[in-house]
Structures are given as C-alpha cells and as structure tokens.
Length: 200
Length: 223
Image (cartoon, rainbow over all chains, first blue to last red; front, side, top):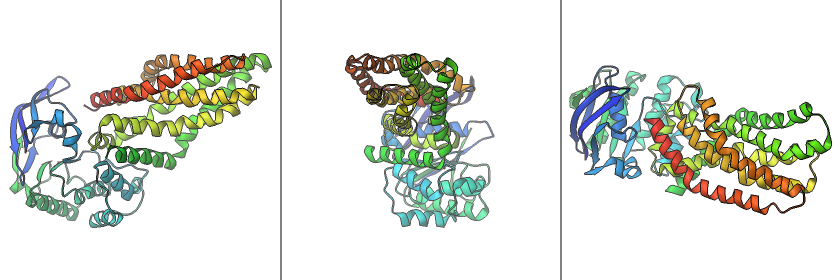
C-alpha cells in the first residue's frame, strides 16, 4: 500500500539519508530505527506528506502522495512529536475536534470511552503532565481503527509501562485488522519483535 | 466534509479565544488607546480633529490588526496542532479561510462595533458613523486575509513579528486609502459608493485567492 522509492532527505545542507526504499503492506509493522538526529522524524513527516523528499517519491496504492494530498491525509493518522492538544481545551474537546477534522462525527460516549481507556483526567490540558498529554493524543487511535495507516513518532515516550503496554495492544489489534503502522522509538517495546526495521 | 471541517475550525478558534479573552481584549484596547492618543497630542481643535478622524481610526485599525496577526498560526504551530490541521481531510486553503474568518470575528469585528464610539471623540458628524462602520466592515476582513499570507510566511522565524509588519503593512496601503477615503468623501457630502464598492471587490478577490497563497506559504514554513 505504502511504497517509498529512493527517498532522500536533506536538512540544513546535510544529507540525512539517501536511497531509502521500502514497501509496506496491510497488516505490517515498520520500525524506523536510528540515533538522535538521524532523520527519523523527517522520514515520518515525509511519509505523511508534511515534508517533500529532496529526491525520490512516496506512493500510496500506486499514486504519488503529493498528488493525492487530502485524499491521502484521510487515510492516515499521524501522532507527532508534539502531542497536538490545545492547552486551553479539555482532552474531550481536543479529541472531539481531532475526530471532526478527520471527517468522523464521533458520539460523545465514544469520546469519553476512549479517554477513559487511557485514563485521561477531565481537566484543561494545561493542568496535565507530559505523559497525560501523550495519552490524550494517543486516545485518537482508539477512534481511528478504520484508518488504514498509523504513523507514530515516539508513541511510548513519557508513557508509564501500563499505558505503553496498552498502546502496544492497540497497535497489535490494528495490525490484526489489516492496518499498517510505522513508528519510531528509543524504548525497547514488546512489539519490536514483530516489526521490520528501517535503519537510518 | 469541507463545510463541516471549516465549521469545526471556526468553532474551535472562537472557543480558544473565549478561553483566552485577554488576548482579544489587548488588541481592542490597543485600538482604543492609539486612537485616543491623537487628540491628546494634537490638541482639541474640533475642525482639525474632524478632518483627521477617518485616517487616524483606519491607521489604528491597521496596527491593531497587525498586533493579533502574529498569533494566527503561531500557537497552533507551537503545540503541533497546525500539522494536524494540514493533515485534516479538508483542503488546506479551506482550513486557512476558516482560521482567517475566526481571526476576523475575534479581532476585526470588535473594531467595527467600537469605531463609532472612537469617532465620537473626534466630533465626527453622526451621519458618518454608518459609512465609517461599513468601510471597516468591508476593509478589516481584507486586512485579516492578506495578513494571513504574511503570518504564514514568517511562521517560526526569529523576529518574525517585525518582519511581518514590514511585509504586510505596505500591502495594507490600498485598503487604508479606500477605507479612509470613503469616510472623507461622505464628510464633504459626496457619494462614497465608489470606494466602498472597490473595497468590496478587494474583499471578494482576496477572499477567493489569498487563502491558497497562505496555504502554499504554510506548507513551506512547515517543512
């Protein structure tokens, strides 16, 4: 489904990686490995379409993602480095807005359930800890099971072991349902064993 | 889908403005204070005040609109929600248009409402309030729409605020000339419909094309 061909990325005059090619089918898990500054986040952003590769191309179901634009965006969930939740809103409002922007009108109970599953307290986000913000961001995954491609940048960062295990479970379930997941991590996670690795 | 997404974004930004009322109040207070400084500095000669009123009110509106522009995308950029907006299912131009509309509702519309009160300080004839408010109603959205391009271009730059003013203020000149001109025409008893129609035309053209330029600028800034 997702296919990268000879992707090269240059940031600030330095080539981070070049000639990177891989293909990802439904039900497959891909881990992007590398040291700090090796371009893991850049690669994820290229796969999202947020960043254009210096050379090479990324295709989704055979069409270049630069041509698909929002049609491609609708097929993916990206959980980036920043949790992407607004400080002045509650996790509930944040999740509601995120779902609506993905084009899904989600029932209130489902939102409450997703936040409950990640035990995110119902406080304005500014009062939450880093880990709780992360949980509030990851709660989107529970409502995105029908979205084919998950791109997760350091999903386990700042999470406690229970939440990390739960996230791994979610990823496992998504793979079983035929979805694809690309992620980066520095923490050793149980799902790493199932993942193909792209070394940068 | 597109309509639903833009409604969500407008509602989201209005809700955020409601939670951060002080930001909204600062721009409005800035407008009031700048416009009130002139009579204090120039002196209370009624004829002079009456003749400078349209220009002063319009310049104050321009500056106040500049003040809030820097925040248009910066907050969303800092917490990562801007990336999510770019990745939402709606075309980026539509997202930008919705954000700009919300920005105008919060920073432009209050100026339109308060302007007659400022005009009162300048002893402007009461039958000109209508033209003044109408010119601001047509002109201030253009300021937000054009300003959004500058805000997107300077996103994430050091000293972006000053650069933003340098980029955007020259582009505001036609709006200033037409807006203040409309009120001046009316004050000497001539029809101001020419200026107002031109402002309306600018609003339509800018409203249709500028969001796409802003979208392109945003993509560049996010890379």
